Image (cartoon, rainbow, N blue to C red):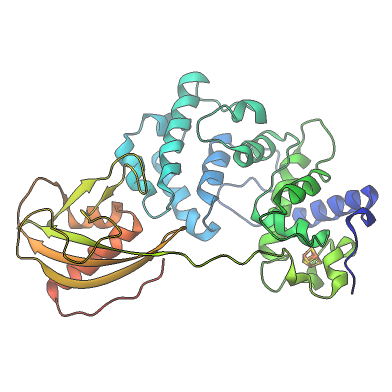
Length: 366
Ligand code: SF4
């Protein structure tokens, strides 16, 4: 069937879709630890909204939830977070990925504490002035925490828009158009609870009904206005340009233990991948196999680990030894809990390799 042109969805239909989706959200909102349920008189704490939105960028709700709980238990307010040592926050962030975000998180918390008396500003324009706060986060906090009309567009919302309007332009080129389409649903200019509910309703629809694969169109509260449904292949949207293959890199990670069950770690340079985080000493990640180790010891090969970053995949050969040197000596359990995932994998491999150096290659996903 032929896709319905965008112009065929009238503003009246847009208003009906908004109304139907808000009703649906009132009955079907997901229960999330950072969320105030629809209809609640209490407004959500902007700190919790901001923290959850930063964590949810590029990771899933189930993965982010325990981190959110741990952060808000340890640092219940933005002032508490602002006062935390960098190393504690970076260690608590380990496993969430995108470590530049953890540094921005701290910079933003400190700016709110220092410049705003610990209270987040309530408009998109002022939120945008905070370090590390981009257009998406500013819109999300303005809408969800302060009930301001704002166009909050994440991947879920893009997908729903691409389907409602059967947008034939592939991502990422379609992004500005999808954002413009989403703006049509932001109706009214006075603050109110509907502006907080609307983006969350769209996100919930995208997460639970208008799913990336196999959308549940027969359960969809806005099917009456969906152009993709009329094509008979709603799951085809949003169209995507096929990505090229990720480059693959290689390197060596050195797991060095002393006689007291501690591991030798290094602090990575502030700039660059995993900047400022604790890590194992490694070679460059384009290394040839005979790179010189950080100290001259009797190194054993403990196998390899695989890790996938956004822009490349990596094979690390893990070498283990016992000895001394100028490192940050850290108990194994603390190292295991505080290291970014790629180093945790290598440490696990190294410690396993220590017990049984003949273990073979582990093929691990991200
Ligand atoms: Fe998504 Fe299907 Fe609903 Fe259209 S009808 S918005 S494709 S779930």
